[in-house]
Image 1 (cartoon, rainbow, N blue to C red):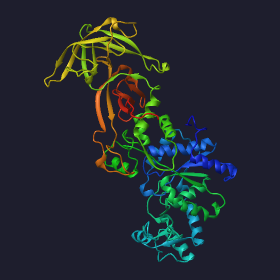
Image 2: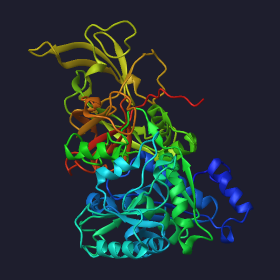
Image 3: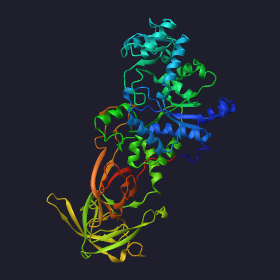
Image 4: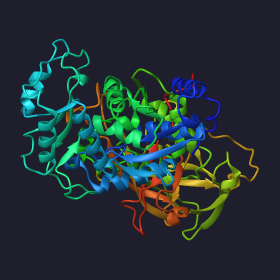
Length: 557
């Protein structure tokens, strides 16, 4: 899916690419990007920004876009995540065509290049324990110190590394490290680990390997093998860029031309969790209803909630691409969801907290079919027929026995319009044993039919309603923000979870919705935009997820 302003909008990344094209930095002035997810969880809204940025950048310059799984840590990876990521990216509209790759496709080459670094005296096998490596590494203010194993000979390192590959040592007993500078001000350049021993079954390579490359080593090699020109990364990789370049500059195959890493700011939203570790904990602890829980800002959750790819693209276009991190008000995202749905979804009526209204001057068997527009802003959505009967349901908060001032809904002796139908006037009501209104009695005026040209008295209130006998029972899942406070980082804790983030109601929708299909979207008058939940909907009873409410607290400046 290409943004409407893709060819005209600009940002600092496009400016850098324009500079590369002007300087003939890459052969044939090509542009080749990629999205490199780790298959250890589901993608979220922040990933959506990165996916669309990489894809739209390639489209802008008539280039290519790859999807590549960085599957270098099999202890945390799963085929489920691979399949979900592919589904999410397809849904967003980013087309990798035939360019689907895995880091594991290159494990043989990565091993070969590691041997090359050893032969050049640029890598060594270290026997320090993980705790000792951390201690020797130093701090942000104190330099590190050399490992006692740093000066092993090339031959010794080659033999030890081969033995590591052959499974002769236990997990964690040895690592292969780059030999750079333990006193570097950049802590990422203090002899970073590039291989570790890990006996873990891999979803692609099985048990062929018991050593696996570290991400920071594998990533530049993968990019270079695939001919990536511009490696667009989030801002936390800025300090890793020197090592990215070091790897490629010291491997003969990539010295002449290698990718350019460019960092951009991540997307953070208020009241939103994007830390993958905490998301997984919420799923594993069953605090939420799986990775596709509509309260989560995972792409799967957004899709199940009824958000469209177009809304996400338009939102990402609006926030742009920045060089420094910031947090965006979630109300802004909700504005774009709402804006995308307002002219594309049918407007219907649903009653979520029903109370019965009896129209006493209608016969018991009265059944009248009324015609109503599906969306007055989009006539192409057509019309539908609504059954008007003696008994109907309205929402409970649309009636009060003793209303406050400026209450323009139904109360004793007050008259309101039923949307698309007639005026009704309350003359009585019934209370149950708990003093709660259980039934409202009204009369209707047959001269006040909507669309009949009636120009008589005016009423201030219009109520949505559903026939009590001709309707579709339905469940409505209403959502608030999952977090009751803004996280101050990518991680948070369960004390921040809003216990009222999910509210389930059973009510009634128009009979028109009997044939509603999974993931189909509707606007329910006064309640918001909803989508048919594909997970819990049955053939007899639809379940509707609240996509977004009708009111916005964010305005375009």
